Image (cartoon, rainbow, N blue to C red; front, side, top):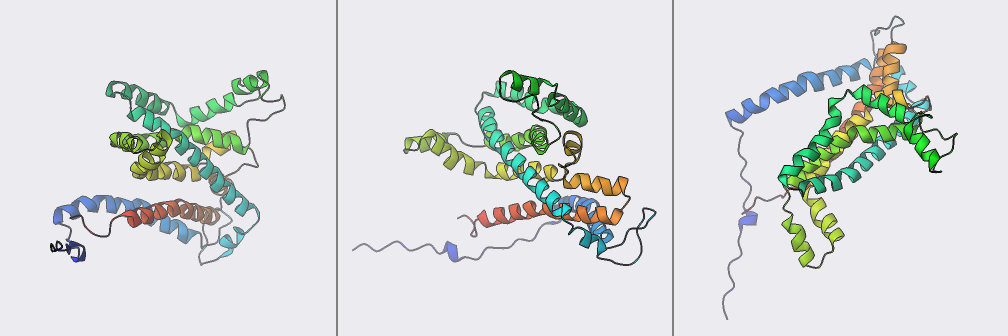
Length: 301
């Protein structure tokens, strides 16, 4: 009886830890200093200000206090926070649902046609951000093109309100941040080996199964990037709800602006900003944890 081949013991070999070289330290130091000086330090200062009391003249009083954080327990703030979260999540999900097939379509085009489609995606950035929002305000106006078209086809009534509500905010948010979702997904789809889809269909998968079980996992890094670059600015948006939203459609960003410029209450604005920073950092932390859990624990042979 033939002897069995010896089992490789490479899996039991401990991973060798290499120290970063001096060049790597010099390359990493500038961005780390930038993040510390312009992100970590301001964030800590904002959190520290939130634990002070507001001065009647618009300044910050000495001493520490939890009064600002207690005011966040008022019934209006949990409602605003919840509205901000679900509006941002819904707009992000819709952006991803639209961006994935668009990125797939552009990546399958011939190279000479891709640049024209990418140009159409980038073209809105050539117009000022506020001008684009006001353009949507004109379109959603009771006398605007969209309202009149819906009424003409019997899909809306004369008293239907398309402006100054949460759905107007969602529509404009999707329009604004859809290019931010398409570009990283396209970058990931461009590197994807589309022959894998043909192989999946040869093995019995239909077109939809190959798309969702092969293509989607193959661009997971692009999905994570698109999720973050869409969700994070959507959470902190204040210009869109301020222009197309109504008084009952305020988001966290609007509350921060009111506390700074109207009430002159910097500690209160800092406390709301700290809550927003936590809401922004949470998906980033979850994303990094998810990526680290998907990494192999043993080095490749």
